[in-house]
Image 1: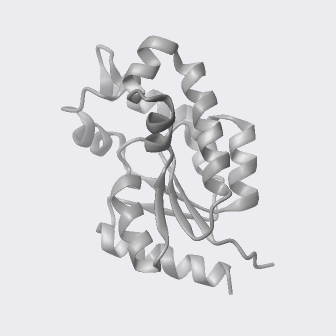
Image 2: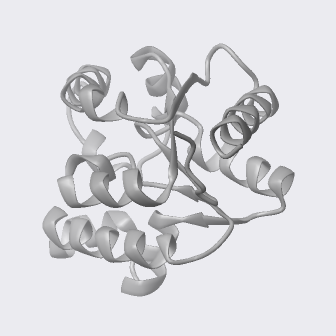
Image 3: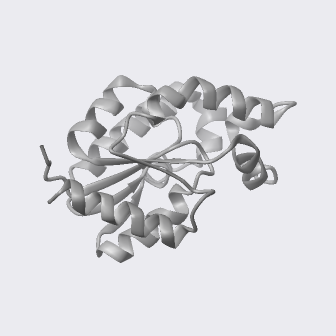
Length: 174
């Protein structure tokens, strides 16, 4: 049964391409691009790293849930979500009900290569970031696999990913 959803939500681990592919896809579809992390930062008046450091991860996750609810009330959007948004049943339920969910993936080594010089990633402030990426990915993979469409951002360029996502979205929405 085809659903009539006019929101595409991009999920996936950090550095899998959500912030790169999202704006390209939105432009292609003539949709608005919304980033839940940017919404949280605007709502809280702090960077994500500051929220984690000063208020803790729980405060961030609550703000992230509120941003998701607000975004999913919008029409014709491509939504880039934070990598951990899918950890919570309440978020997975909202996404499944209200969005065409696309999971972006990449190998741990590729992710590490993309983020190794980025000091704004609170979850990677540790002695062995690559091992931490592998650990977190393993914990979250079951949630990333629950989606309407899955694509590797290693196999295709951002533009090719957009075309494949667009095709899958139109097939799903008849």
